[in-house]
Amino acid sequence: MRHCLMYQGGFERNFPNLKPGTTTFQGTDGGEHPVPVAPPTCDGARFYSMEEAGKKFAAVRVQHGQDDVVVKNEILLDQGRHLWFGVGCAPEPNELTDESEAVNVEELMVENHEQKRQLAEIRGRFSVTGKAKPKLKVKAKA
Image (cartoon, rainbow, N blue to C red):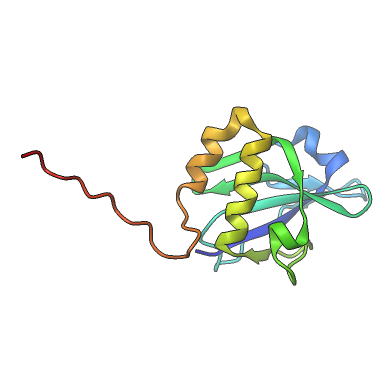
């Protein structure tokens, strides 16, 4: 699975009006700009970040399939823990590993108790090891 992180504008200007399905953000120039499209290699979760004052970036939204969750409480992204070194926040989409995806969603669940079920559904679709999740075997009753 390949996940990605995409930029969705400045936090102070855009977060108060962010909703699932949003396809544009307001730039510092006051104009509307399109949210980047996920690269074709991104078949996993799409994370969206916004830039806060001081060049800090926060995860604010997670999408996968029909699920689109705008979190009530953002998490500040730490390059080493959330993105892995060598991957940063930029206007262009960045690929994330399964391990990064797991850390990001789990921290979002901790900070957003009321949205934990929605986030857990997305998280449950991916394997941290990159291997397919094993199917449960049901024993027949004797």
